[in-house]
Length: 149
Image (cartoon, rainbow, N blue to C red):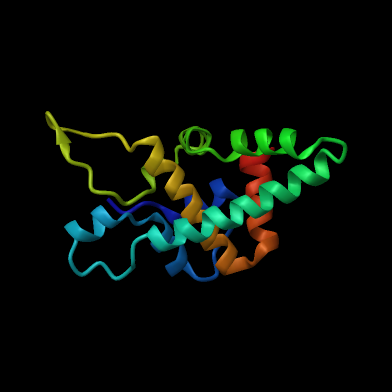
């Protein structure tokens, strides 16, 4: 089943100029292995970049929001903000799992759910895709509105 990316763009609050980047962000390696001929890559590389963009934006935002906090306090807040468990929960709350293209082995005839690790990785890939498509300001807008709040 191919996800409705227009609906996803509304959900994340960003419309892609280059839809190829969004498709790549949604596609996991397991899906590519099971679907030969898939024209988009997988999101591994985007997740790596998205992690770095997320690190930068969260650190910058926390420094500006808490000018009197020390580095230790900022670091603790930072870790709580970006850890995979929280990103996974954010992805669940936005129901992003239904958009990710990942091979789901059957479990007594039912598809397996996507782990929070995969959800977090998918969010990082989406961040990278937004960054590559719209620049740092667009990525920051998504991160601040959906992750830091």
